[in-house]
Length: 150
Image (cartoon, rainbow, N blue to C red):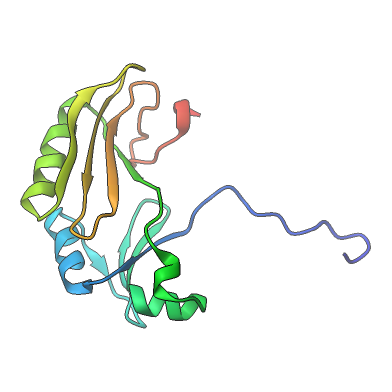
């Protein structure tokens, strides 16, 4: 460490979520059918701007090559992508839209013990999304999410 300088810290944010996908065209169509608009991108990445982040779709083989690992090393992680909505009534229709686009409903919309309303779907390659109305974490007018409203 250079004398008098603070070490570099990692700020609490995610700039880009990249999904390594087997069939780029199919998954791109899935997200476009959900109503998302892709932005101009390069280097084989399909990008969708989110509020404060970007979702990138990238061929799985290329992602493994970029990282420097075998495709099998990437496997499938135990993770979900959360999408919060403003009202309880928005959860079920979004699940149905995902199903109509080629996704699979894993858990129908239902109330949960902590007071929210939740459903899960998987995109055509198995990426799991949680669609949630959380009455304790209302979305800001621009759609940004803050845990417990903070």
